[in-house]
Image: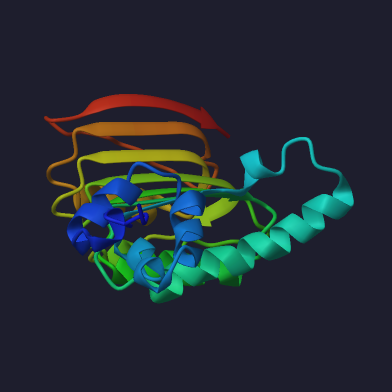
Length: 217
């Protein structure tokens, strides 16, 4: 009896649902199965990349090769992704240069991402302005070790409910004021190990908030 590939005959919506249970690396890997599967992964609404975990227990030479392949691999789903993004998670420490990270975050924002979770620590990195134009965000988690959080005026975050800031450097009093005043529906605020030496007045007041904060001066 001849084998029949019934799964590939399923509609895109069901195949996308199946891929949503896989890691992003595994989902992208299905593109080699057949021409039917080549671009199905681009419809998956969640992208999760963790270079730090991938590099555990690798030697220096293997790390260098893995970083290069990671960047190439990461560019592929982002450049081909045409549907809206629900979740975008990136953890790459200091191993990817700032301009590349800018590009990835900008692409996620243009896809209307709702949950953005970024953990990075490249040298001399300042938060990209386009990140603060994303009206679709409901969750924003930033771990920017030794990086500056520069928030422009007129930030539109009408749907943001969760904001976690870790290890960021606040640029000025206006930074916190512009950010927090734009989040009328904020319910969960975490500020941990942040550098506030540039601030003269740090005030948080919001009737919906549950707040957890620690500072580094």
